[in-house]
Image (cartoon, rainbow, N blue to C red):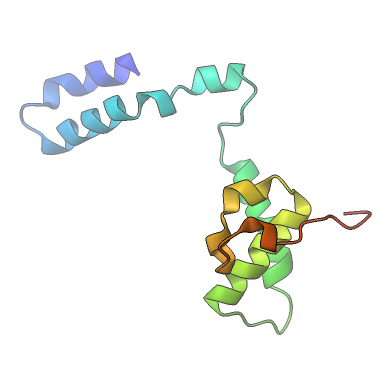
Length: 113
């Protein structure tokens, strides 16, 4: 991070983009500490998220002949993710289904899921 900030420094006076970039990096430095995240065993690539999206969205919403409204798609994705991994309920938020309370979702996995 420090090397990037040093590389930007000569351009700060003449470039608004360089100043904006520097401000962003400084404000988000705690979110960009990838070496620390890897030491903690956290994934820092997008592949896991992309695979999850393909599993949750692709296999459920893109079946032959299916057509969805945004509200309907959001609701079924929330339920699908919930059934695949119940802790996702906390992350999804009830608004995906227009619900005010996540307890309204039944996320008890069926045997074999």
